[in-house]
Length: 141
Image (spheres, rainbow, N blue to C red):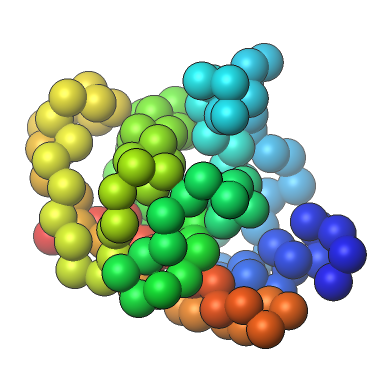
């Protein structure tokens, strides 16, 4: 698989099977994530957002389950709130090992009023070029 598009088509297949095609547009910033800007994301279903760059960064720490991964957020948040939350969690994924069942205090992110703690839930894993990659869903449970 030689392109990022083919990589993400494989990784996102379980999500597409559930919610249908992902949004055509990628929400990103003028300044990219690697330079301190917001994480890139696409719409997933009616109210979900999916990161689409984190698992390609060699700086990302493998999850507790040993995978590179992307983050899915289907909380009742606006696009800008979801992007702020996913950006903060994406930055954390470069510094800490995260995984299924991990809880994270997100109060300092000020991404969404009233949201203080999130839990990561394993959503799906796929093999892409013999590398296991996952999607973790951000929940407020």
